[in-house]
Length: 158
Image 1 (cartoon, helix red, strand yellow):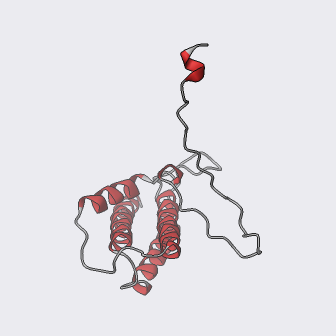
Image 2 (image 1 turned 135 degrees about the vertical axis):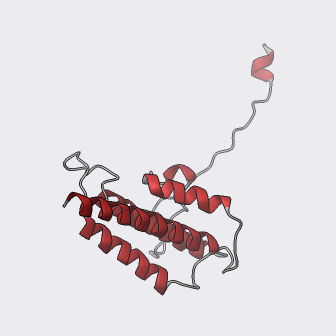
């Protein structure tokens, strides 16, 4: 007999993730938190905003989410902000239109999305974690600056 057959094998840990939407009792199951690899790609200005947010120290504000439900809600809120930022970036001509493959500037559409983000900022003030507040502030700042720049370009050409 050889030593390799007799040597105990190293056991690998197996992780099972239940991805069903409902429990055996029929109640809705909370989804697992998205992993780092599940984050959708960010538009260019949002990447810069997120990098700036990571560089700053946490300021005063609500503590990090405590329960799993709060963590899930926080992840969904961040994804909402990033999706709206991507929509505004597409309207500002930063991202190509997936249907046509061309970059198109739609200042009215960008203004609507920026106004929506400002309304979210106003209505959620005091209810967000420091990280969520920084993300929303930075995304709004970047989009507003780009909007003003595009608006000046449009007024020069007309």
